[in-house]
Image (tube, rainbow, N blue to C red; front, side, top):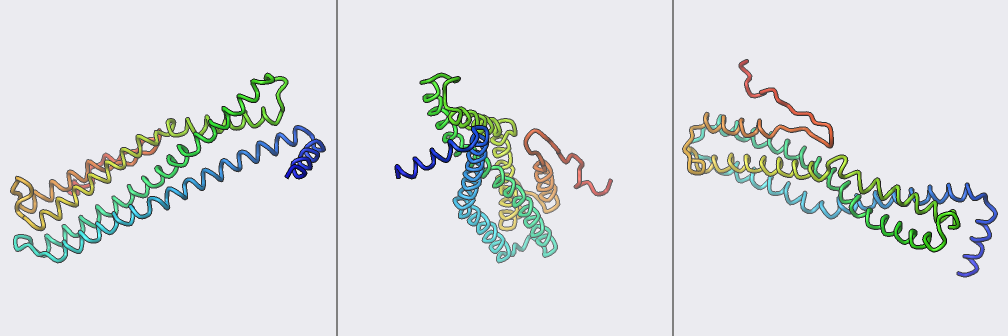
Length: 235
């Protein structure tokens, strides 16, 4: 092992300092990017079971919906409710895909940040022993690279509002699930839904209005909202 280290030291002395520093910066950056990718993959693996369970719940609810026929709901009305459930499931899947994308990047950045800042702190300790001018150029290159990467991983989530976006789309996904639950309950208890008694037309209006309020396409600093009333088809 000692012989191997000596050989590396001899090899490093033979190459120009600028080239060695450049190779070191490229290596550290490449390792950081690779670590980021590994953390993202790890999150997907950890979350796959939860995602699958949510899909199973939707599938089970739809199966139960199909097995029960409420005499107060006509076949045409039930077909409309069935299509509404499927439309909401598509919307939920879209929000879930956005959540997974945001979460895995957020998870990877938060996991990588402590390692980068910790290594930067260790290098600060060594550099302080000799002062900046007298310190090894490789130490200085490592410190500057790690400090830059630490700043990027620390600032990125705030700049692109990852935490806020995650909270927003989690809330949207949950509210869409509530609407689906109302439809499933109405199929069982119509014309009663909760404490109210609604005929089919009024219930459908209520569902459409609730769904319309949840249309939201917003990522990071850029905001796009659908404000056109797509449900007022008679205009």
